[in-house]
Image (cartoon, rainbow, N blue to C red; front, side):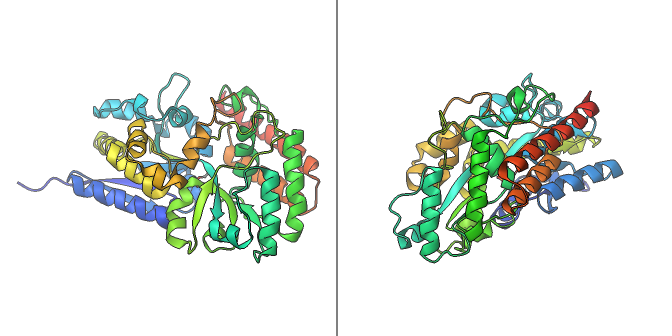
Length: 418
Ligand SMILES: O=P(O)(O)OC[C@H](O)CO
């Protein structure tokens, strides 16, 4: 009998560096594990580019089956009725085993409706950590990894004096670091209604004295490069791996690239905090991305997608993915298995984001966030941060403008979903 045709599943993603290799390997392993479906991964550029490409393709009727969308695109995808096939529905239709309780609640909460229906598949969740060049600390005679922001500023000055002249400390993801994670970690709101999780009629509030103080300090430290700016996304993460910036806040998922590029001893530490902020550190929130299934595909293709998601959820595969990439274990079983194996004693670097996420019981300020038009909001917020760092505005003026301009954008989004 003639061999049955293989059904292709297109997967558009935004993973570069070490994580690109991991994505290609996952697809290859799935393809080798069965002969009915072939997952074809395609790198579509950074997160915002991949998301835009997916939306444009949907409008043109040429969308992929699976689209990787960063966490800040969640509200936009959720409200794109018809463009997406909810994951809980997909798994049910395909008859694939699927238990939403198997996944870590801090992650699924992000991608589920208030009724607990999981809309997208949590693939690569991260949190933000501070990457630390241990050789550099030694060189600058710094005995302990700095824990608070004042300690970071102090260490960065010593590092600069020890030869790290162009960058004492830095961060990727300008707003993720200085607004989103900063707020959760200090238990102050980004916006009302639990940062939008409880309703799209949320109002931004991140121009508090603590936020202003932090940005104001950065505007002073940037002048002599004790702090140096590294852009809106993560293209400059390599500044840590190259040895240029010895203290660098970015995703835990930077691990896969760090371990293949850094020629020095390094580790990750929790994000710094201001000791005077009551209750800090609180808990961090997740970042990274999830896999959205696009609407309008054939039943057989959906069956293949569901099989691929079941494949991805396998405990051993999840544990390995976590241990190699630095992204979080998505399932409880994968986390337990990694812990029980003694992995974290040997690799404390990989447990930092999990410790941050579970540091305290989340509050209204630290459950997560869901703002419409968030991709555009981030651009506005980054623009204002850049204006402050460039000396065109005071920190207060910049954050006031970020809030006002952002609120206007939120009201526009509210109208489109009503
Ligand atoms: O580098 P990632 O994949 O952990 O993503 C970081 C941010 O959450 C992106 O919005």
